Length: 315
Image (cartoon, rainbow, N blue to C red; front, side, top):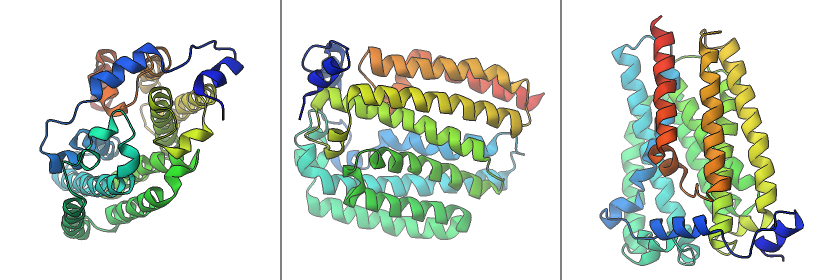
């Protein structure tokens, strides 16, 4: 099996052996253990912002009545509990591989700060809390959450080790969050919006895989043997293009904003370009949530984007 540097040289990149210097700096900055109490760190609260995908799109253009807002809040809570349960189960399944990763070895289970028995008890507690929340949320939310749990159980058992399937399964989890939000709001869901969210999430996940490949190789994640940096770059370009097309078609046919909302398209392009720059040029992107929430250019773009959408909604 060829090394990453050999694969790159075969494709004419001429990259020197080993991970690029920015990747080594990134690994060094994030390699420390979490400052949170170990059981809380096991739930990965830093990843909970992913569940906010349930919120803004279903509310966009809708009447912000209390009943709708409350149902969506319950949906967010359900996905927070479900995703935390998935993280605990996934860490239990991956504890030995995580110990071989320069960053993941500091996770509570891999580092020994949380015992496996404690993690199992925490998973059972999360499941017990989730059950009444799903009962209160109704079938429009419960069905996507249960499907999310089922898909992730298959992911932890086998699918995470299969190249390509691993990234599609993770992206599907975000689409299910979107379905849960729309199920809570009672509004119809646009097929173009589903395509946009799916391909955008593939961009973020493929960027993460590219970073993992450069920082730690394929030893800690078997699926990485099916990837190369050049191949992942091609996938990034393809998914980025599909994301832009899907977003434009969603704005044109479903949003009701028509020409005005098309003014957000340059912001969508800039955000994609910025993320690709972070992944390809700076060799970062190992934690997409941190990238999106801490990069100043991303935050400024998101703020301007939200302001434009709010303006279109009010006019």
